[in-house]
Length: 118
Image 1 (cartoon, one colour):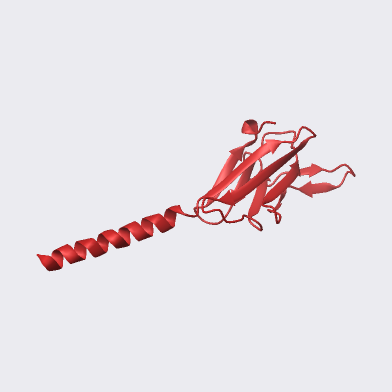
Image 2 (cartoon, one colour):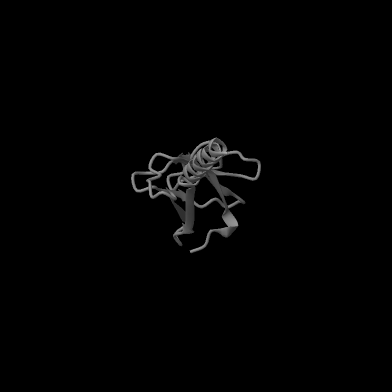
């Protein structure tokens, strides 16, 4: 009986450890309209760690990266990485879009462009 109880305690402790580790690094991302035809997204993780260098892209309904013309008329693809402040600013597309903050398998956040406000 004592051996079974010990095994149960070990399995419970192991389960708690694995569950708590899985929950401590949840990706977080929010975006807002700057009011000047640009959008800024801020990212991070639930454990407080930085999202600097994390991939981010702006895609259409088919999942293809959107390109826009900048103020100089050059084509700019709306994808990159979060800067050292865990931010990414882009020109607001004129068509339907969504932002994908991609911190790896199982760690992606998608934000529909219609949900982004000032």
